[in-house]
Every structure is written in C-alpha cells, then in structure tokens.
Amino acid sequence: MAASPLSTARSWLFVPGSRPERIGKALAAGADAVIIDLEDAVALPDKASARDAIRQAWPQIEPAMRARVLVRTNASSTPFHADDLALLAHLDGLGALMLPKTESTAQLAQVRQQLPAVPIVALVETAEGIAMADAIARSAGVLRLALAHIDLLADLGMPAASGGMELLPARWALLLASRRAGLPAPVDGVTTATADPALCLQDA
Image 1 (cartoon, one colour):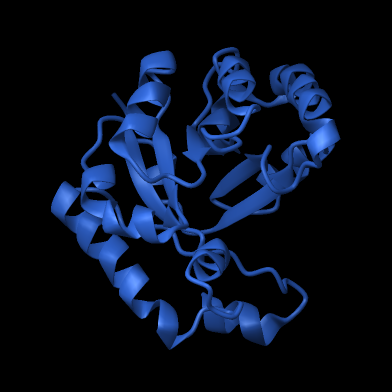
Image 2 (spheres, one colour; image 1 turned 180 degrees about the vertical axis):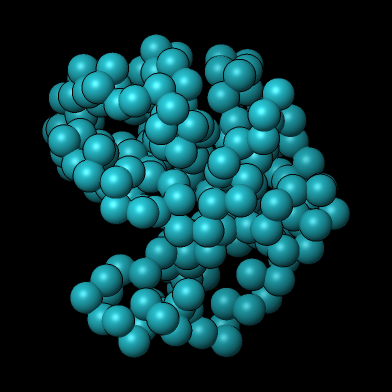
C-alpha cells in the first residue's frame, strides 16, 4: 500500500465545511493538506446542510487529489458525530479523518470500527489528551497526532496566546509519543492571523 501523502504533509489549510466551493481552490493553493472543517467553522444550525454540501461536492474533487484531503468531524461527545461518520463512509479516497478532542483509545476504537479504512489524525486539545498521548499514538488507525493549542490553553485556564514557551511541554509530549509509536512528527497548532506575515513565519 502506498504511503499517505499526509504522513509527510507540512502545511495544512482549513476550509469551512459549509463552503465546499473553496476545496478546489485550497488544493490548488499549494498546501500539502486541506482540512474540510465540520466543527468550529460551521455554526450549529448549519451542520446538516454542510454535510450535504460536502457529499454533493465530493465527486468534483479529482480522485488523485483526495488523498490530501481530511475532514474534521465534530467531537465524539456531540450529537453531530455519528452523522459526520456516516458522511465520511461515502467519501471515496478520503485521506484521513481529523478527530477533535481526542482523549481516549475508546474514542479511536469507535471511529475505527465504523471507518476501518480511513486513517485518523488525532487532535489533542485537553489536559486529558496530553496525559493519554502515548496510548492515543499507539492506537490502531492513527496516522499522526496534532495539537490544538488554543483549545488546550482554554482547557488549562490559561490566557490565549500565539503559542510561546508555555506550550513547549505539550509539544514535547506529542513529539515523544509520536516517536515512541513510530508515527511521523506531530502537526502543530493553527495560525489564525494569516494576514500577519511575521507571525506566520514565527509560528512556522
């Protein structure tokens, strides 16, 4: 089986699930990976319509490009998660699923049971997730770990920041867990101020 291009992807670009017309543009923009977001980028009343829009847009994505595409579902604790997984079962060639608020192997096993052929990028964004990083990294189907540093800071009750020294222990924990599990390097958190070239360079 050919290695997933997401194993070596370095640049990751989010696209709102409610704006599927942007998927092709994002793929053409040069990012290694494009994440269709059904979680934070989609308002609660729009979850169902966003899923429908993705389902309709998917056949327009070139099959050769689909391996670079992920879908970030809603968290397993939400009422939207089951419908998100049902959608993903119809997206032939999908590169991976990004699972938010990953905290346990049980969450991953549930996804794996329903979508055994879809790799998982486990998004760690809570203190519990950091504590369980080794077990998460060793779970079947996990392709990479990823850090959601803004939500982690909120979970820890710390002020929002661009990602300075206070996050080094979390980054180190994910790096060690990835290395011990034989996974590629973890994916760091987002840069939201995309109009600030200096900050983008610093974060990169």
